[in-house]
Image (tube, rainbow, N blue to C red; front, top):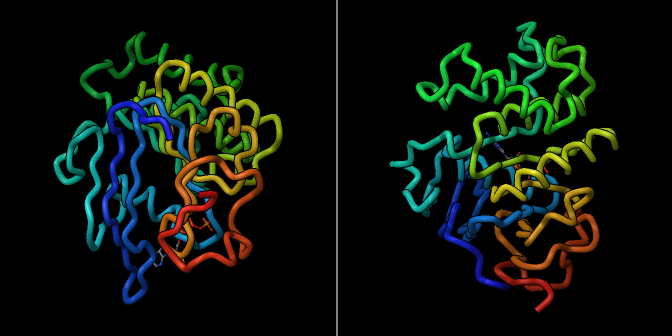
Length: 250
Ligand SMILES: Nc1ncnc2c1ncn2[C@@H]1O[C@H](COP(=O)(O)OP(=O)(O)OP(=O)(O)O)[C@@H](O)[C@H]1O
């Protein structure tokens, strides 16, 4: 693989267990500046756990995570990251508009943008335009389709002007129009020099943007390199190979 830019995410020997059950078993991974890296693998293989541990949302049992060359425990520059979780917490009961949800993405920028200032409004409008939802700004988010709600979350992540976007299965169950709008928004982010770490079942509309794929199986990275042609996962991932630590296609 070509050497990428300075490390944005570095993971070494990362181990996470829930109770007795090890879900990540010594994962090593690196995402360089400007890369668009997919994390692929079967249901339950540990993909979400990996990105959540990278973000410090769940504690690691062993190993190290560095973000922007800083150990996770000392990392404070959260405005440099945008995170889109698997889905909008449904049923929060808060009747927020699309613009309000997106504005929440600016909270990490507190102090840089005044609450109701023009800079803030422009950041919200720009992020909504990037995902093709400019005309829905004032609608309650609950009235949007699932795909449009997912785009709202991406706009929220983009609004703060992050350098790294972390996306967890952003296109799962999303209609084709939203998938294309999503791919265009990520493409614009990447063209502007952004770095992306994205959990995916299949490359789908992001394929042209992906620079590399990490395939996770049973808590280990079993492939780090070219993006697989087919949906990865299920039981056919490398069924005849050695049980762990092996790279596909070499
Ligand atoms: N908070 C938790 N407590 C206990 N077990 C968990 C927790 N989070 C995840 N797990 C378990 O860890 C394993 C890996 O889950 P994870 O969500 O990382 O998988 P995934 O590869 O992202 O799967 P999917 O493709 O279905 O989203 C699963 O067996 C899951 O049940």
